[in-house]
Length: 325
Image (cartoon, rainbow, N blue to C red; front, top):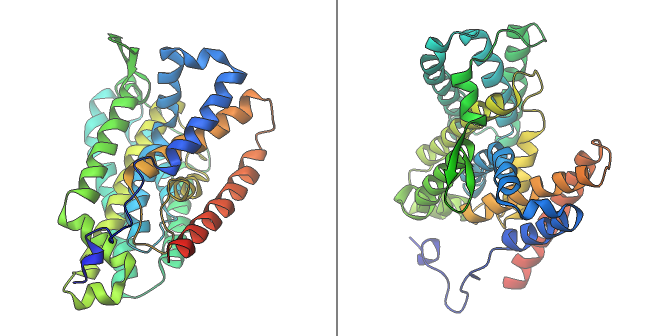
């Protein structure tokens, strides 16, 4: 295989500071100006706890994006996880962990179906996952009757809202932040430290060359979608734990995850992206939403701002690629 799939090109070393870090630093500085209390460890940890579902979702979505695809079904998967958990557990703590295992099995099945449709039926990923999004959302709403049902017990909700007290430097450490760090570390290792990660990047960079070089393209695509769906299940568990039961729990999160990856420097056509970029891209987007709330701007502006950011981020990515070329 061409060495450019695995090694940086001569004279083109990556900058040690990701663009997502710079964007996050600027927006968080604006938050501190509007509300200085965000310098305190307690509020900073609470910010990370609330941002954790989006960060987890972005890390999973990155695998599909670097492999040259899109996954629009993750938001509906989050909604399904929240509604299914409340209905199946129905307030019984003894059911929590068996149901969580079942939710991961459902997420695996959704990701597997997406991957098989894209890899073997050659359906464009944006169409395949759009169809899956509508299907999963329909199942979730039909199952719940279009309204919240059941109840989430404390041992489920603690995953999203429990904190470990008296931790040095940070004071109270939310369990959700621990999950965030674990997913980010695992995602970084999978993309940067494994053969699978190199294959995903090669597939997104040049599918034909990757196939000729012996990369198992179909298996790699399927695995990327499975990872994305399993991340959506994890995000759904955090959302349910923190926010409770809602029929719109994951609404719009699929676009937020894609926007997060793009803000962090991922290339929408595939072949380029880092987990650190996805993490800080998600933190940047969530920080922007927090800033809008602090400024008292309408909630409806979030979608408009998110659309503008996505267009600008894609435009900046294309401009950087042209300059590099």
